[in-house]
Image (cartoon, rainbow, N blue to C red; front, side, top):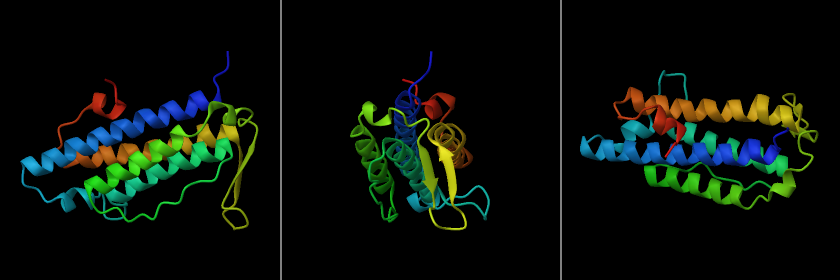
Amino acid sequence: MSVSMYAASVPVFNQMLDSLSDVLKKAEAHATAKNIPAENFLQARLFPDMLALTRQVQIAADFAKGVTGRLAQVELPVYEDTEQSFADLQERIAKTKAFIATLDASKFEGSETRNIVLRPGTPKEQTFSGQAYLLNYGLPQFFFHVTTAYALFRHNGVEIGKKDFMGLR
């Protein structure tokens, strides 16, 4: 039995975006309770050459909308990357989930063999089959950034665990 591209993408992105949203709420509550400036979390990095938390969330949202939108062959919304607060990041996640919710499963039919071209016309141009794009590129990239956000919060004392990461209720 095969799994549809819709089933392999949309529910996964939604689950993890929900968990990321929940972890952001816990981090904000932790910062408030401990009188830690929100900026300490929003600009946190695991190492100086890594992107800050805010950028990790932005990129995770970008992969969720980009992968699903490209597979469904719809125009992608453009986000300006101006988030500067927990509320802004929550809005970014909400916008992404709202976009994904507009994608009908029928739009994904045949997407496993559809060519997905990234950075067309540039030296970094890459072409994937839809299945390779989802399974070997999009999902790993998405999980990297969600995991990094989670790790930043754990590293900075937010009491979260694997259940929080998984988003299991």
